Each structure stands twice: as structure tokens, then as C-alpha cells.
Image (tube, rainbow, N blue to C red; front, side, top):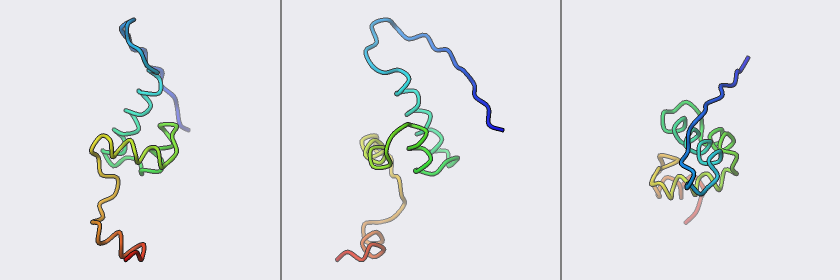
Amino acid sequence: MPREVVVRVKVPSHYVGDVEKEVRLAYAVDLFLRGIVSVERAAELAGMSLYDFLVELRRRGIQAYSYSDEELREGLEIE
């Protein structure tokens, strides 16, 4: 049975942003990079659509799939 762990983090009062969202995203990215979860599951954990998660990975310079452009074109039958 999965269990939840509650983590308390002190954040400076001047921080502007959605801390919970940022932490969920960082956790999901970390699990994905370590190969613990798929990109699809990581997006789910981050509370994002797969498309938005892929955009975020790209923004961070993280490759979601290890296909070359040519392999991708062939797989999708794009000329």
C-alpha cells in the first residue's frame, strides 16, 4: 500500500510563487531523471499534462526520449 510522507520546508516570506507546484514538479523531474518513473507518470505526479511536462523538460534542457530526429521521423513516418 502506497504511503504518503509530509515534508515541511521553510520558504522565505519574500518568495513569490506556487511552492507546492514547484516541489511537485522538481520531484517528478527527479524521479524521471533517475529512471524510477516514465515520462507519462512523471507528468501525472507533477499535476501536468504530458505535453506541458515535455515542454518543461525541454525548457530545462532535459531530453524526454532518446530518439534522434531521423529515428523519430521514421517512427512517425514523416518525410
